[in-house]
Length: 350
Ligand code: NAD
Ligand code: TYD
Image (cartoon, protein in one colour):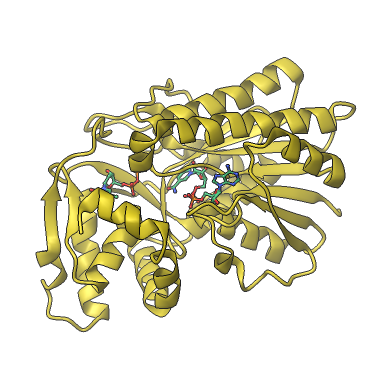
Protein backbone atom coordinates (compact mmCIF):
# COMPACT_ATOMS: atom_id res chain seq x y z
CA UNK A 1 0.00 0.00 0.00
CA UNK A 2 3.05 2.24 0.46
CA UNK A 3 1.46 4.73 2.82
CA UNK A 4 3.45 7.42 4.54
CA UNK A 5 2.27 8.07 8.10
CA UNK A 6 3.30 10.91 10.41
CA UNK A 7 3.21 9.95 14.09
CA UNK A 8 3.66 13.01 16.33
CA UNK A 9 4.97 12.55 19.88
CA UNK A 10 6.45 9.20 18.85
CA UNK A 11 9.35 9.53 21.30
CA UNK A 12 7.01 9.74 24.30
CA UNK A 13 5.46 7.02 26.41
CA UNK A 14 2.42 6.02 24.35
CA UNK A 15 3.78 7.35 21.05
CA UNK A 16 6.81 5.05 21.16
CA UNK A 17 4.53 2.02 21.51
CA UNK A 18 2.38 3.22 18.60
CA UNK A 19 5.46 3.78 16.43
CA UNK A 20 6.74 0.28 17.29
CA UNK A 21 3.34 -1.32 16.53
CA UNK A 22 3.16 0.35 13.11
CA UNK A 23 6.83 -0.11 12.10
CA UNK A 24 6.82 -3.81 12.99
CA UNK A 25 3.39 -4.59 11.59
CA UNK A 26 3.32 -2.58 8.36
CA UNK A 27 6.57 -3.05 6.44
CA UNK A 28 4.93 -1.39 3.40
CA UNK A 29 4.24 1.85 5.32
CA UNK A 30 6.83 4.50 5.98
CA UNK A 31 6.55 5.86 9.52
CA UNK A 32 7.89 9.35 10.23
CA UNK A 33 8.18 10.11 13.94
CA UNK A 34 7.86 13.85 14.56
CA UNK A 35 8.79 14.94 18.07
CA UNK A 36 10.38 17.98 19.73
CA UNK A 37 12.09 15.79 22.37
CA UNK A 38 10.88 17.70 25.42
CA UNK A 39 11.68 16.35 28.90
CA UNK A 40 9.12 13.58 28.14
CA UNK A 41 10.51 12.52 24.75
CA UNK A 42 13.30 10.00 24.64
CA UNK A 43 14.71 8.25 21.58
CA UNK A 44 16.04 5.49 23.83
CA UNK A 45 12.40 4.30 23.86
CA UNK A 46 12.83 3.31 20.18
CA UNK A 47 16.33 1.78 20.15
CA UNK A 48 15.01 -1.59 18.93
CA UNK A 49 13.46 -0.17 15.75
CA UNK A 50 15.53 2.94 14.97
CA UNK A 51 17.41 1.26 12.11
CA UNK A 52 14.37 -0.25 10.38
CA UNK A 53 14.13 0.88 6.73
CA UNK A 54 10.48 1.92 7.06
CA UNK A 55 11.16 4.36 9.93
CA UNK A 56 12.74 7.74 10.44
CA UNK A 57 12.78 10.43 13.09
CA UNK A 58 12.50 14.19 12.57
CA UNK A 59 12.98 16.64 15.41
CA UNK A 60 10.28 19.26 15.03
CA UNK A 61 8.19 21.32 17.42
CA UNK A 62 4.48 21.33 16.52
CA UNK A 63 4.19 24.89 17.87
CA UNK A 64 6.18 26.03 14.82
CA UNK A 65 3.48 26.38 12.12
CA UNK A 66 5.95 27.06 9.30
CA UNK A 67 8.15 24.09 10.18
CA UNK A 68 5.15 21.78 10.33
CA UNK A 69 3.74 22.97 6.99
CA UNK A 70 7.16 22.51 5.36
CA UNK A 71 7.29 18.90 6.60
CA UNK A 72 3.85 18.19 5.17
CA UNK A 73 4.79 19.74 1.81
CA UNK A 74 8.04 17.75 1.63
CA UNK A 75 6.74 14.36 2.75
CA UNK A 76 3.06 14.52 1.71
CA UNK A 77 1.86 12.02 4.33
CA UNK A 78 -1.32 9.97 3.76
CA UNK A 79 -2.15 9.88 7.44
CA UNK A 80 -1.36 11.56 10.75
CA UNK A 81 -1.58 9.97 14.18
CA UNK A 82 -1.26 12.88 16.55
CA UNK A 83 0.01 12.16 20.07
CA UNK A 84 2.43 15.04 20.73
CA UNK A 85 1.26 16.86 23.83
CA UNK A 86 2.07 18.16 27.24
CA UNK A 87 0.49 15.31 29.19
CA UNK A 88 0.85 15.76 32.94
CA UNK A 89 -2.03 17.26 34.95
CA UNK A 90 0.20 18.52 37.80
CA UNK A 91 2.48 20.35 35.36
CA UNK A 92 -0.62 21.90 33.71
CA UNK A 93 -1.60 23.35 37.08
CA UNK A 94 1.88 24.90 37.39
CA UNK A 95 2.30 26.14 33.77
CA UNK A 96 -1.07 26.15 31.95
CA UNK A 97 0.04 28.27 28.99
CA UNK A 98 2.53 25.60 27.85
CA UNK A 99 -0.46 23.28 27.51
CA UNK A 100 -2.39 25.78 25.38
CA UNK A 101 0.59 26.31 23.09
CA UNK A 102 1.39 22.65 22.43
CA UNK A 103 -1.97 20.94 22.85
CA UNK A 104 -4.22 23.57 21.26
CA UNK A 105 -2.04 25.71 18.96
CA UNK A 106 0.17 22.74 18.02
CA UNK A 107 -2.88 20.68 17.07
CA UNK A 108 -4.32 23.54 14.99
CA UNK A 109 -0.95 23.90 13.22
CA UNK A 110 -1.13 20.21 12.25
CA UNK A 111 -4.76 20.51 11.14
CA UNK A 112 -3.91 23.53 8.96
CA UNK A 113 -0.96 21.74 7.38
CA UNK A 114 -3.04 18.61 6.69
CA UNK A 115 -5.85 20.67 5.21
CA UNK A 116 -3.47 22.69 3.02
CA UNK A 117 -1.61 19.59 1.81
CA UNK A 118 -4.67 17.40 1.20
CA UNK A 119 -7.12 20.09 0.00
CA UNK A 120 -7.34 18.83 -3.60
CA UNK A 121 -8.22 15.31 -2.58
CA UNK A 122 -9.13 14.03 0.88
CA UNK A 123 -9.64 10.48 -0.48
CA UNK A 124 -7.60 7.91 1.49
CA UNK A 125 -6.36 10.52 3.97
CA UNK A 126 -6.91 10.44 7.73
CA UNK A 127 -6.11 12.65 10.73
CA UNK A 128 -6.28 10.59 13.93
CA UNK A 129 -6.27 12.67 17.10
CA UNK A 130 -5.27 10.80 20.27
CA UNK A 131 -7.10 12.21 23.26
CA UNK A 132 -8.12 11.40 26.80
CA UNK A 133 -11.18 10.48 28.84
CA UNK A 134 -10.37 13.48 31.08
CA UNK A 135 -12.25 15.74 28.62
CA UNK A 136 -15.51 14.36 30.07
CA UNK A 137 -14.76 15.74 33.54
CA UNK A 138 -15.53 13.63 36.54
CA UNK A 139 -17.96 10.85 37.43
CA UNK A 140 -19.59 10.29 40.81
CA UNK A 141 -19.50 6.86 42.46
CA UNK A 142 -21.41 5.25 39.53
CA UNK A 143 -21.80 5.55 35.76
CA UNK A 144 -19.40 5.39 32.80
CA UNK A 145 -18.23 7.86 30.13
CA UNK A 146 -19.73 7.11 26.71
CA UNK A 147 -18.87 8.93 23.48
CA UNK A 148 -22.03 11.03 24.05
CA UNK A 149 -21.05 12.25 27.54
CA UNK A 150 -20.84 16.08 27.36
CA UNK A 151 -17.37 17.59 27.66
CA UNK A 152 -16.72 19.11 31.10
CA UNK A 153 -12.95 19.43 31.63
CA UNK A 154 -11.58 20.70 34.94
CA UNK A 155 -7.78 20.81 34.78
CA UNK A 156 -5.80 23.01 32.38
CA UNK A 157 -4.55 19.73 30.81
CA UNK A 158 -8.05 18.36 30.17
CA UNK A 159 -9.30 21.79 29.03
CA UNK A 160 -6.50 21.93 26.46
CA UNK A 161 -7.26 18.40 25.22
CA UNK A 162 -11.01 19.16 25.05
CA UNK A 163 -10.24 22.29 23.06
CA UNK A 164 -8.05 20.36 20.63
CA UNK A 165 -10.79 17.71 20.20
CA UNK A 166 -13.26 20.50 19.34
CA UNK A 167 -10.85 21.93 16.75
CA UNK A 168 -10.41 18.49 15.16
CA UNK A 169 -14.21 18.09 14.85
CA UNK A 170 -14.55 21.68 13.59
CA UNK A 171 -12.09 20.93 10.75
CA UNK A 172 -14.18 17.89 9.76
CA UNK A 173 -17.44 19.88 9.88
CA UNK A 174 -16.09 23.03 8.23
CA UNK A 175 -13.56 21.78 5.69
CA UNK A 176 -14.44 18.08 5.35
CA UNK A 177 -11.06 16.98 6.74
CA UNK A 178 -11.30 13.20 7.38
CA UNK A 179 -10.73 12.78 11.13
CA UNK A 180 -11.14 10.26 13.94
CA UNK A 181 -10.67 10.86 17.67
CA UNK A 182 -9.87 8.32 20.37
CA UNK A 183 -10.42 9.10 24.06
CA UNK A 184 -8.48 6.68 26.22
CA UNK A 185 -8.32 6.05 29.93
CA UNK A 186 -5.09 6.13 32.01
CA UNK A 187 -2.25 4.12 30.46
CA UNK A 188 0.57 2.28 32.21
CA UNK A 189 3.46 0.13 31.00
CA UNK A 190 7.11 0.17 29.89
CA UNK A 191 8.69 3.60 29.19
CA UNK A 192 6.16 5.43 31.38
CA UNK A 193 7.72 8.70 32.52
CA UNK A 194 8.20 8.61 36.32
CA UNK A 195 6.09 11.67 37.10
CA UNK A 196 2.82 9.70 36.75
CA UNK A 197 1.46 7.62 39.63
CA UNK A 198 2.59 4.07 38.73
CA UNK A 199 6.18 4.68 37.52
CA UNK A 200 6.69 7.31 40.24
CA UNK A 201 5.78 4.74 42.90
CA UNK A 202 8.03 2.10 41.29
CA UNK A 203 10.92 4.58 41.32
CA UNK A 204 10.25 5.62 44.92
CA UNK A 205 9.96 2.00 46.13
CA UNK A 206 13.34 1.25 44.52
CA UNK A 207 14.84 4.30 46.26
CA UNK A 208 13.03 3.80 49.57
CA UNK A 209 11.26 7.16 49.24
CA UNK A 210 7.69 8.04 50.32
CA UNK A 211 4.81 7.06 48.01
CA UNK A 212 2.76 10.30 47.82
CA UNK A 213 -0.99 9.64 47.80
CA UNK A 214 -3.03 12.76 47.05
CA UNK A 215 -5.95 13.47 49.42
CA UNK A 216 -7.66 10.37 50.83
CA UNK A 217 -6.48 8.06 48.03
CA UNK A 218 -10.05 7.17 47.03
CA UNK A 219 -9.77 8.86 43.63
CA UNK A 220 -10.48 6.28 40.94
CA UNK A 221 -8.91 5.74 37.51
CA UNK A 222 -9.52 3.16 34.76
CA UNK A 223 -6.15 1.68 33.73
CA UNK A 224 -5.13 0.23 30.35
CA UNK A 225 -1.83 -1.43 29.38
CA UNK A 226 -0.08 0.85 26.87
CA UNK A 227 0.38 -1.90 24.26
CA UNK A 228 -3.39 -2.42 24.30
CA UNK A 229 -3.85 1.31 23.65
CA UNK A 230 -1.47 1.07 20.68
CA UNK A 231 -3.47 -1.90 19.31
CA UNK A 232 -6.69 0.09 19.65
CA UNK A 233 -5.17 3.08 17.82
CA UNK A 234 -4.13 0.76 14.98
CA UNK A 235 -7.71 -0.58 14.73
CA UNK A 236 -9.39 2.83 14.79
CA UNK A 237 -6.86 4.40 12.39
CA UNK A 238 -7.59 1.67 9.84
CA UNK A 239 -11.24 0.80 10.47
CA UNK A 240 -12.85 3.63 12.45
CA UNK A 241 -15.60 5.69 10.80
CA UNK A 242 -14.69 9.17 9.59
CA UNK A 243 -15.89 11.80 12.02
CA UNK A 244 -16.38 9.29 14.87
CA UNK A 245 -14.97 9.21 18.36
CA UNK A 246 -14.04 5.97 20.10
CA UNK A 247 -13.59 5.57 23.84
CA UNK A 248 -10.78 3.14 24.73
CA UNK A 249 -10.60 1.47 28.14
CA UNK A 250 -10.30 -1.82 29.89
CA UNK A 251 -13.27 -1.81 32.29
CA UNK A 252 -10.55 -1.80 34.94
CA UNK A 253 -11.19 0.69 37.74
CA UNK A 254 -8.89 1.07 40.73
CA UNK A 255 -8.95 3.47 43.66
CA UNK A 256 -5.44 4.98 43.84
CA UNK A 257 -4.74 3.59 47.30
CA UNK A 258 -5.76 0.03 46.30
CA UNK A 259 -3.66 0.23 43.16
CA UNK A 260 -0.59 1.42 45.08
CA UNK A 261 -1.07 -1.39 47.64
CA UNK A 262 -1.23 -3.97 44.79
CA UNK A 263 1.93 -2.43 43.33
CA UNK A 264 3.66 -2.60 46.74
CA UNK A 265 2.70 -6.27 47.07
CA UNK A 266 4.10 -7.19 43.65
CA UNK A 267 7.27 -5.12 44.22
CA UNK A 268 7.96 -6.83 47.59
CA UNK A 269 7.58 -10.24 45.93
CA UNK A 270 9.80 -9.39 42.98
CA UNK A 271 12.46 -7.75 45.18
CA UNK A 272 12.26 -10.63 47.71
CA UNK A 273 11.50 -8.19 50.52
CA UNK A 274 9.31 -9.10 53.53
CA UNK A 275 5.66 -8.48 52.71
CA UNK A 276 4.49 -5.05 53.91
CA UNK A 277 7.90 -3.39 53.38
CA UNK A 278 6.85 -1.12 50.51
CA UNK A 279 3.41 -0.31 51.97
CA UNK A 280 5.16 1.38 54.88
CA UNK A 281 6.31 4.04 52.42
CA UNK A 282 2.71 5.15 51.67
CA UNK A 283 2.31 8.80 52.71
CA UNK A 284 -0.86 10.85 52.36
CA UNK A 285 -0.04 14.31 50.98
CA UNK A 286 -1.88 17.51 50.09
CA UNK A 287 -4.56 16.94 47.44
CA UNK A 288 -4.29 18.08 43.81
CA UNK A 289 -6.46 21.20 43.25
CA UNK A 290 -9.59 20.45 41.18
CA UNK A 291 -8.89 16.71 41.47
CA UNK A 292 -11.43 14.67 39.45
CA UNK A 293 -12.97 11.96 41.64
CA UNK A 294 -13.47 9.16 39.15
CA UNK A 295 -12.88 8.27 35.49
CA UNK A 296 -14.38 5.11 33.96
CA UNK A 297 -14.80 4.29 30.30
CA UNK A 298 -17.66 2.54 28.55
CA UNK A 299 -15.74 0.88 25.70
CA UNK A 300 -18.80 -0.73 24.10
CA UNK A 301 -18.51 1.11 20.77
CA UNK A 302 -14.94 0.04 19.95
CA UNK A 303 -15.79 -3.46 21.14
CA UNK A 304 -18.97 -3.93 19.09
CA UNK A 305 -17.97 -1.94 15.96
CA UNK A 306 -14.31 -2.98 15.72
CA UNK A 307 -14.11 -6.13 17.87
CA UNK A 308 -11.56 -4.62 20.28
CA UNK A 309 -10.73 -6.15 23.67
CA UNK A 310 -7.59 -5.63 25.78
CA UNK A 311 -5.08 -8.51 25.67
CA UNK A 312 -3.86 -8.55 29.28
CA UNK A 313 -5.46 -8.33 32.73
CA UNK A 314 -4.32 -5.54 35.04
CA UNK A 315 -2.37 -7.92 37.29
CA UNK A 316 -0.50 -9.32 34.24
CA UNK A 317 0.11 -5.86 32.79
CA UNK A 318 1.38 -4.53 36.12
CA UNK A 319 3.71 -7.51 36.51
CA UNK A 320 5.09 -6.96 32.98
CA UNK A 321 5.53 -3.26 33.76
CA UNK A 322 7.43 -3.83 37.01
CA UNK A 323 9.65 -6.44 35.29
CA UNK A 324 10.45 -3.90 32.57
CA UNK A 325 11.42 -1.22 35.09
CA UNK A 326 13.56 -3.67 37.08
CA UNK A 327 15.40 -4.69 33.89
CA UNK A 328 15.80 -1.11 32.68
CA UNK A 329 17.21 0.71 35.66
CA UNK A 330 19.59 2.56 33.35
CA UNK A 331 16.59 4.02 31.47
CA UNK A 332 15.15 5.19 34.79
CA UNK A 333 18.48 6.73 35.79
CA UNK A 334 18.78 8.53 32.47
CA UNK A 335 15.30 10.05 32.54
CA UNK A 336 15.59 11.00 36.19
CA UNK A 337 18.97 12.67 35.88
CA UNK A 338 17.97 16.03 34.41
CA UNK A 339 14.94 18.26 34.47
CA UNK A 340 12.81 15.64 36.12
CA UNK A 341 14.83 15.69 39.33
CA UNK A 342 14.31 19.40 39.68
CA UNK A 343 10.56 18.98 39.08
CA UNK A 344 10.42 16.10 41.59
CA UNK A 345 12.13 18.24 44.24
CA UNK A 346 9.69 21.11 43.59
CA UNK A 347 6.62 18.82 43.74
CA UNK A 348 7.50 16.61 46.66
CA UNK A 349 10.42 18.25 48.47
CA UNK A 350 13.84 16.70 48.77
P1 NAD B 1 4.26 11.93 27.05
O1 NAD B 1 4.30 13.20 27.85
O2 NAD B 1 4.94 10.71 27.57
O3 NAD B 1 4.88 12.20 25.60
C1 NAD B 1 4.56 13.34 24.86
C2 NAD B 1 5.50 13.41 23.65
O4 NAD B 1 5.16 14.59 22.90
C3 NAD B 1 6.98 13.52 24.03
O5 NAD B 1 7.75 12.67 23.21
C4 NAD B 1 7.32 14.97 23.77
O6 NAD B 1 8.68 15.18 23.41
C5 NAD B 1 6.36 15.31 22.63
N1 NAD B 1 6.04 16.74 22.58
C6 NAD B 1 5.61 17.52 23.61
N2 NAD B 1 5.47 18.79 23.18
C7 NAD B 1 5.78 18.79 21.86
C8 NAD B 1 5.83 19.81 20.87
N3 NAD B 1 5.51 21.09 21.14
N4 NAD B 1 6.17 19.46 19.60
C9 NAD B 1 6.49 18.18 19.30
N5 NAD B 1 6.51 17.19 20.22
C10 NAD B 1 6.16 17.49 21.47
O7 NAD B 1 2.71 11.68 26.77
P2 NAD B 1 1.92 10.29 26.67
O8 NAD B 1 1.49 9.88 28.01
O9 NAD B 1 2.68 9.37 25.81
O10 NAD B 1 0.61 10.80 25.89
C11 NAD B 1 0.58 10.83 24.46
C12 NAD B 1 -0.78 11.32 24.02
O11 NAD B 1 -1.80 10.48 24.52
C13 NAD B 1 -1.11 12.73 24.52
O12 NAD B 1 -1.78 13.42 23.49
C14 NAD B 1 -2.04 12.49 25.70
O13 NAD B 1 -2.92 13.57 25.87
C15 NAD B 1 -2.77 11.23 25.24
N6 NAD B 1 -3.26 10.36 26.33
C16 NAD B 1 -2.42 9.99 27.36
C17 NAD B 1 -2.90 9.12 28.33
C18 NAD B 1 -2.00 8.64 29.45
O14 NAD B 1 -2.47 7.93 30.36
N7 NAD B 1 -0.72 8.93 29.44
C19 NAD B 1 -4.21 8.65 28.28
C20 NAD B 1 -5.04 9.06 27.22
C21 NAD B 1 -4.54 9.91 26.24
P1 TYD C 1 -1.59 10.60 37.12
O1 TYD C 1 -0.75 9.38 36.95
O2 TYD C 1 -0.92 11.93 37.26
O3 TYD C 1 -2.64 10.61 35.93
P2 TYD C 1 -3.98 11.54 35.74
O4 TYD C 1 -3.87 12.72 36.63
O5 TYD C 1 -3.88 11.92 34.31
O6 TYD C 1 -5.14 10.65 36.06
O7 TYD C 1 -2.48 10.40 38.41
C1 TYD C 1 -3.30 9.25 38.57
C2 TYD C 1 -4.03 9.40 39.89
O8 TYD C 1 -3.06 9.30 40.95
C3 TYD C 1 -4.71 10.74 40.07
O9 TYD C 1 -5.91 10.55 40.81
C4 TYD C 1 -3.72 11.55 40.89
C5 TYD C 1 -3.06 10.49 41.76
N1 TYD C 1 -1.66 10.75 42.14
C6 TYD C 1 -1.27 10.61 43.47
O10 TYD C 1 -2.08 10.29 44.37
N2 TYD C 1 0.04 10.83 43.78
C7 TYD C 1 0.98 11.19 42.83
O11 TYD C 1 2.16 11.41 43.18
C8 TYD C 1 0.55 11.31 41.47
C9 TYD C 1 1.52 11.70 40.39
C10 TYD C 1 -0.77 11.07 41.16
